[in-house]
Image 1 (cartoon, rainbow, N blue to C red):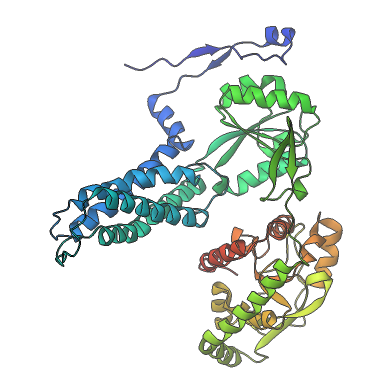
Image 2 (image 1 turned 45 degrees about the vertical axis):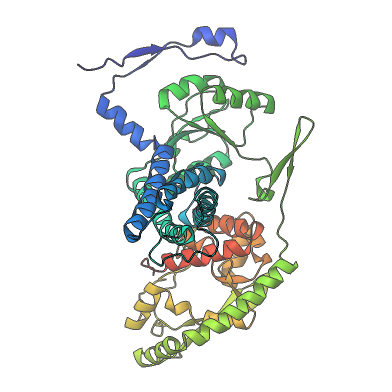
Length: 512
């Protein structure tokens, strides 16, 4: 028997909705949907995400304990092994305390790795403490036979097994989720409040980066957005129509961007969204200075936002530069055989120098020679000049493809960038930072791109936050500036380590 899901839904009203608007709103009739379609929508909206994650964590912890039980086939006269099953609930209770089941925008496996390992280690210690308190010890002076199971031996083995199994299962889940988001646009439906450039930027970011797990399904604002058809996102009416928009789109997220709507009405809108079970996110008015370290405090009932600040001239960046130069020097020594082999292959591939130096803009607008292995043959003087597309950064193969065979290989693996380790040792660059650009393009971009010049507050880097997010080659320079300034304002050594780890994955992808 097929369920009849046709129903007439009256849009819920709020105190902010006037009587004549409520009377004018006609009932919204939803089309019939099959059980298969409802199941598809549930999965595509990532329904059951938390329950699935909890189940996978418990399964991984269970596998770790079961493996150790199979591993330890010794005698267990004290009854240690039955108590080791307490490790599973211990981990399951510790994971939420580290916010490992809270959905975060753009969260990656690297963000979860440290909290997972900490939870596993603390869970093993708690279980060992319970066992030591509960299991009766041998009498003093009694020699414990070697074949008997000791509590510490059992828990160390469980800890080591779980330290591999739990993050491995999390990694597989993360890879599967990323694949489904990119291939089939899995994610929560989101409604955006606002009709200006910030709302447009949010929609563009959600569309371009499905890893955030948000799908824009409509815009509401008291002013109809201009060129809304070009966005491909429907206009769902004014803010008074929130309830009808939610029923129509099944949205679970509300993002309040900059809007001409009054703050009082936006606050009421957020309360109405909460009553509908939506998660509300707000773009702060001063978004350029709000970093990940910003905190909210309260003075009575008034919220105060404390803004964090990374000082490029402070001791933190001085420490970063010292670490960069040391690591670059060590890296050059370790890869010296590869470095010398590439020098020889470049020399044999075609006439010309081994290194290719190009003027680039570094910290405080200073010009330096950015080094690369030469990957191309000399240019034809008669060839037409290359022109960069509007809004895109130069890079990749510009104009005629003159790459040598070793040049193609080096560019594909990013090995042509290795001589920049010499720039890092000389103090002209950092391992991580904004990628440097040519002087002629910098002058152009500073006039056209908002906050482009702010990226020169720090040294240029061999890799950067923008590059590990796919902004390499001829990609949007405005997006690069946005990512670079985010990196500067939220810098930490851990963020550098994360970017270096992501770089290893990024260079495995094909590049020009």
